[in-house]
Amino acid sequence: MSNAKVRLSAALTTALAQVEELMGEPFALVPRLILHEDAAFWALCEVDGKGLTIRVSEGVVAAFDALWAAFLATQAERSDALLAQSRVMADLSLVWLMLHEMQHHDLRHFEIIGRGGIAETRAPQVLALVERHVARPNLLAGFGPAEMAKVDPCLELQADHDAIELLIDAYSTEEWKSLRHRAAAVAAMMVLIEVEDSRHGGALSTHPKAATRIFQLLGHVAEMPFLPARFKAEARGADTIDPADLPHEDEVRAFGEAVTLPLYRDSIGLAAAAGALAVQNDLGSAEAFFDDIEIASVGNPRHFRRLKTAGAKQWADFVRTNVTILERLGLADL
Image (tube, rainbow, N blue to C red; front, side):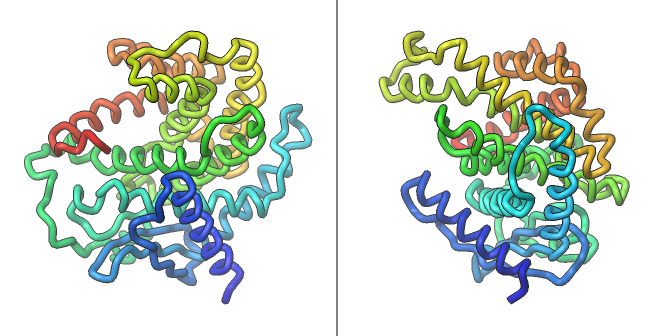
């Protein structure tokens, strides 16, 4: 068995164990993993009568290894360096890839689009690996061209959201270092997908901007210190959080300095290491990025016009469309 296949198999095993630990039950359908001897960067999940299959090219493993080696070599210049081994970070990125693909199935995305395959990057389209349709009704019948153009990116953000929650796990003041490593592993995947799509001029891309995906990622991370208080409120059946359950402002500030701001810099650094100038530009300055995070956290669409960065603006556009999709499909529970 090749080194790439061993590592991908280990990533899938870890992803399945993570789902079972957090959800309290095994993943509904254990995927079959197929490695393709192809230097290009691509992955594909598909459903058929035999179940769920995840196809990954050898180029994915090589690309993660190269990106993490290049990025971590720059860390000596940073006072808030992300200290880790490149192999460990690359394997974390592979685990998140598996979780992301599994969530496409869990969130019924194949049923929604009426297509048997969902690809990461353009290569599977070129190879004609995603043309097969599933024998299910097209739930998007009646959607206009403008809505249809946003459906696939919205589904990608849905899969991102759930896979992020699964990989990052629960909030703990003892796990800040691990949390940052896991979130950075996710950002690396998002950067590499955009890099690969840019090689084809973005043709046939069904993904949001990397900056949009990273904006959602860091928005989730920034909210993590407040999650325990929210969970306590839900357990009590309360509509509002008890102020006594909120973290002290010193903890929130320290978390931002140790995790959230360094993660923004990690994302910028990963984009630089990948040669992704467009991603760097779309992320914007730290001040603008975190101003946008604060606006988005309020959740009032009337304030979205104040968003400054390209990633935040696209995120807001897809948020509106995602609400429409879920309402029209009767899938508000997703």
